[in-house]
Amino acid sequence: MSQRRRFSKVEFDRGAAISRMEPGTIALARAILVEGRPQAVVAREKHVGRSWVSRAVGKMREYIEEANPVPPGWRTDTVTLPESDWPKVRQLERAAQEALSRKDRERS
Image (cartoon, rainbow, N blue to C red; front, top):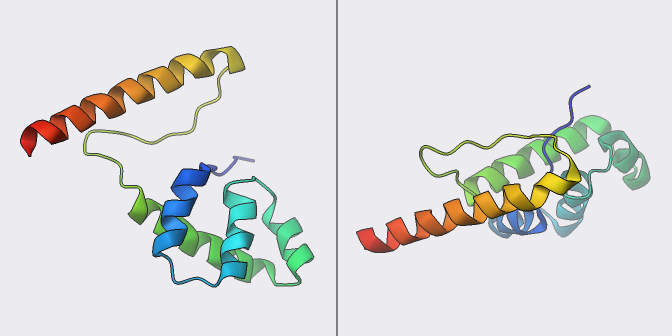
């Protein structure tokens, strides 16, 4: 079974800020998309149907993608690495973001 991508709190909050969802629905989506809790468990705890949860999560994913666009030429993916390699990955990500910011400033 493949895992769905989890989002950082910052990514999620950007999407939530532009959504028209009720606070309770946002909290439900956060439990799944940020905390990584199973949809079935959250649905059971909140006494709502799994299909309703699935639609709410799908809609929040759309808001998150809209609020966190991927720059042209970039790719978002999920990788599995040893924990010791994560600092290298984050360093590469920061360097790429800084280079993109410099490029955007030069265009302005």
